[in-house]
Picture 1 (tube, one colour):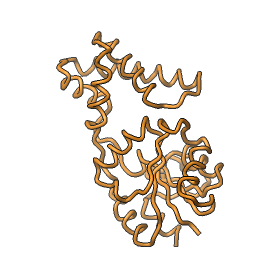
Picture 2 (tube, one colour):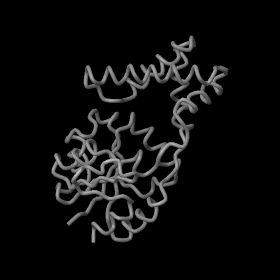
Picture 3 (cartoon, helix red, strand yellow):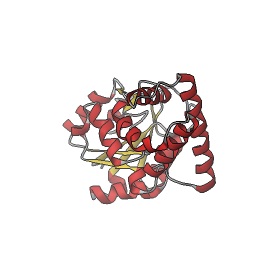
Picture 4 (cartoon, one colour):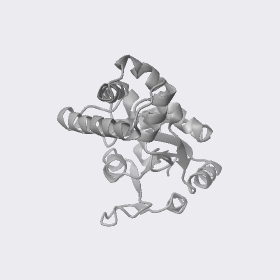
Length: 225
């Protein structure tokens, strides 16, 4: 019998309202730099391409060190002082705005009513940033535990991040179910760690995948009945 419901964050609980380069542009304005939006978009796109190549080559986990390197690359490309990286990263998490999916709060309410313990496992740069994001959408009180890959040092689908969740909640693999919108990271990752994985496929992206799948988070309630 399940005791703990684990959820992914981005794409499962909420999604970003604005494109990331638009947010970066706003932060630069706050720091006193008036830069053309298209230049910011290109600088960030190039920095993201660097990170994808770096990750493929080295297997590095996205964390605050990587975040600093990415921002430094953006600033260098825009011919701005990299000393502003620290200030940039202090402001940025508070400017990223999220919209909660309509099916999330009713599902969380019902899960709590049924007595399930709720946690979040997210591939995100740091626990501090994950806490800021979840607090900004008013959902922090629903979750007893937040796990951020950048803080713990390994990311989904690495089984270790799921096993850490089991240790911290003191339950067995058969007592935890994990739901997320990424087939490899969330579904396969959870299953390989011995948990029950559920793929949340709101846009039917994974129509060819034969797995435990839901199209709305509220459908999870039926799976748990």
